[in-house]
Length: 293
Ligand code: ADP
Image (cartoon, rainbow, N blue to C red):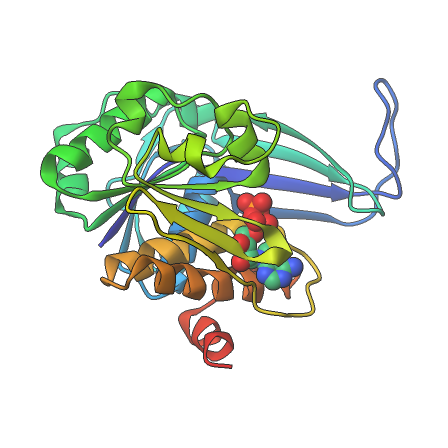
């Protein structure tokens, strides 16, 4: 079982010819509302990729919370332990212009109340095969979750997004770090992604490289580039979430990590060839079909 401890938001996405300047009102085009947040997206990605998945986190007591939870359930994610906090759900207000440029405001809402892991939540983590965390919830909660995993022998994947420095109490419990190039640079403070610097912090690293695929390196001296699957990419939104959720599933199934990364590349590529965010997270059959090609 994959346990995701992370964020859940409602994404409010407005499209316009151009982004408004401060103080300006712009008449927009389409508007779409879709559940998001890296935690919920990766939980949905893992469930659609064929994993048994439980989501830990907090939604608000508003209508958005109901919709987010319904989407998780419909995707096959177990939400029995998802908290409902009195007040607003996390919301991302996203504006996208014709060129695909965006401006995003995230209001964490209930996500910031996800603190102080309960005994039941710790037990869910202890019973899991893989714990998957991101950094859109309070950092103390991430540390508490990875510690619960470590002491129970549950493997820990940290997708360090958004990036911040990894404190020792966090990195010492991480088995596998997943970052894109911007996050890698932000964590190590180096001008370019530096795998040696990352391996000084954690034992295994996956660096995602967008259309160039990914790279896997570990302290045993493995360092492999795993090429992307060639697809007609139209929208890479959520490709990283599709990748990370699928990686957790494949690793949880006991696959070798390089093989797991190759399969996760297929998941990211399937996601990139479809427009949408959480709605374009791929099903296992579609990942397998591209993988076998
Ligand atoms: P993020 O969205 O976190 O920056 P990436 O853009 O690196 O993540 O994408 C994650 C993974 O998805 C990549 O490692 C790759 O395997 C796959 N992917 C992303 N964009 C494409 C693309 N245009 N073509 C094929 N695969 C892609």
